[in-house]
Amino acid sequence: MRRKTEDNASKPAQGGQSRPGYVRVRGAREHNLKNVDLEIPRDALVVFTGVSGSGKSSLAFGTLYAEAQRRYLESVSPYARRLFHQMPVPEVDEIDGLPPAVALQQQRGSPTTRSSVGSVSTLSNSLRMLYSRAGDYPPGQELLYAESFSPNTPEGACPECSGLGRVYEVTEQSMVPDDTLTIRERAVAAWPPAWHGQNLRDILVTMGFDVDTPWRELPKKDRDWILFTDETPTVPVYAGLTPEETKQALKRKDTPSYQGTFTGAKRYVLQTFANTESASMKKRVARYMVSAECPLCRGKRLRQEALSVTFAGVDIADISRMPLARLHALLLPYASGEAPKNVRQAKLHPEQLIVTRRIAEDLVARLEVLLALGLGYLALERSTPTLSPGELQRLRLATQVRSNLFGVVYVLDEPSAGLHPADTEALLTALDQLKASGNSLFVVEHALDVIRRADWIVDVGPAAGERGGEGEQGKAAGNRHRSDSR
Ligand SMILES: [Zn+2]
Image (tube, rainbow, N blue to C red; front, side):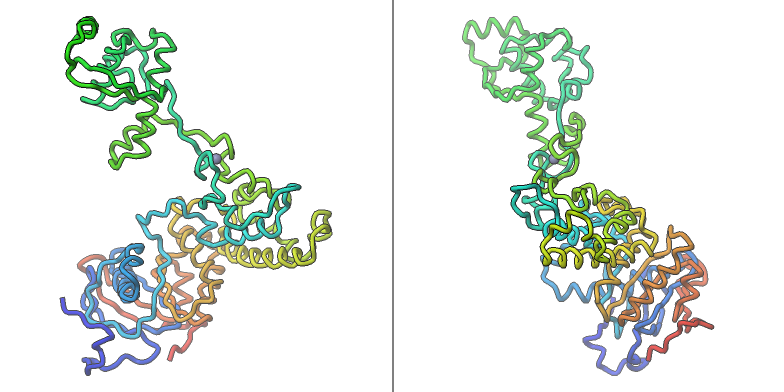
């Protein structure tokens, strides 16, 4: 494939230079696009329409966003590059005038299971600051830094569960699911299969344990030792001999087949889970573990010191579980300066009052954008992989509105998906705010309310697949928000 980029575009190009204020695309052939040429205005709301499969996403994401990302990644170190979910290089002859792009769509397959509404919106950072600087500390407790209120730092994580909120245990029932079996019949299901499991059984024979009686009829002392001991005795093993023959061989001090080392079932499961490099081994032993709420932090993931600090009578774990609308209502009096009337605040130092008010004001302002976008029912601790693509895009959008970036293209994929029609106006307001700060918006969208507000429409089609891939475009007719981008 022959590619040209901005670097060699100074040669007299066919079709001439792109006009300032426009992104010019020549010969886009990604997926089903048929050599599409386009000039799209910058600093405008551009909506890409067309039936499903027409090629509109191939143009917006597969071509424009992929090329912007490729150019950006060329400027960063190979190490940083690996942290991105890289898009394939697009099939296109030339793109001029393309600003850096930010995609607000879901990055599928990115390993961010600990990412949450609070971390994506950065509201959790501000909340930690609030607890650190303006929280109520029990008498005699040292002040804590903001990091100490995060379960993802060593300073904050509960030492019992490492900040996971859950602990994993093994029990007799989880390791011996069928206690009518004998050890020879593999009653200890958690033990390794095949040779290694046989080896452990032969060691028990040497040690005089009964491997031919149903598990539930063995003395409790023996069952507990086999499952839970941390001792790892090494004994002679006589492979293939019966228990009686083994007893004789031991008496005669015959040369054993080999020396075998015993491992209790619990020890085997936990060590394998923690240390194995094999995903299938890990999965296998995980079947014998049961998870339970951490008894120390009761699922709140933080050290006791952090949980003992409160704001408005609530610890930071509970405040992170509140719906955003309730959190907003709780913080509002602090932001407006009414709260100092209560007793606790009256004891505060004037400087602390100022800090409280400033952080609360910032939180309230950012929460208002999220509420306006119809996300007031979410809580900060909600993990982002459980959000719908529409929810995640609106969450990122709300964060960007307050970020003061300018001169970038935001690429969105149906941000109205799943949004209540009554909240569409707020979505459009957020898009308008980003545009007013000097950004471009490229939006793939079906919703008429959004299409109606576009400055420029790129319609890809006319149909799907082979019968699509052609682009038509133009200024949106009768658009009351139309802006001249030149
Ligand atoms: Zn814990």
